[in-house]
Length: 165
Image 1 (cartoon, rainbow, N blue to C red):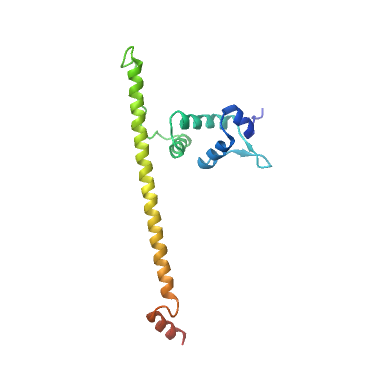
Image 2: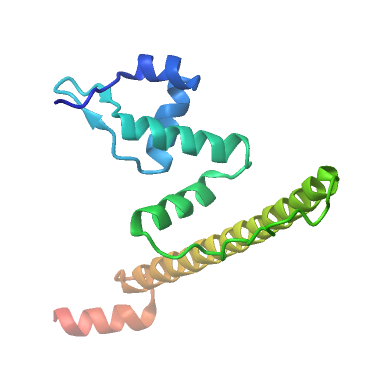
């Protein structure tokens, strides 16, 4: 029995996600979506389930693509989760008062979002440092090349004349 594949237009209707969003998710999350001979995307049932999960993580849990990629990597590697799963009590800690329990969950979610934001800020800082280092290296190389050009520096000119005579 052959697996059924869906074209991007069908996936748009099934999941209620815009086509440009599907292409964006495929690109940023490095999803491996099958293509036919004409290059058209062909989504399998497994792809649909994965896209539903991604859409839920993005819309309901407010995760950004970096966090979703990390979650997908851990799913693929079948590693232990980054944070141990929370054990929910067998009995509600708030008998008859689900609002307090929901408030506790919301507070934990805010804390996780805060941690996520700190990680992103740290990554941005590291990227900035790398860019600064690359810029310094480029400037040093430019200075070195200028020194190596004959006639630009008296020491290099004397050396160049001796070498070429």
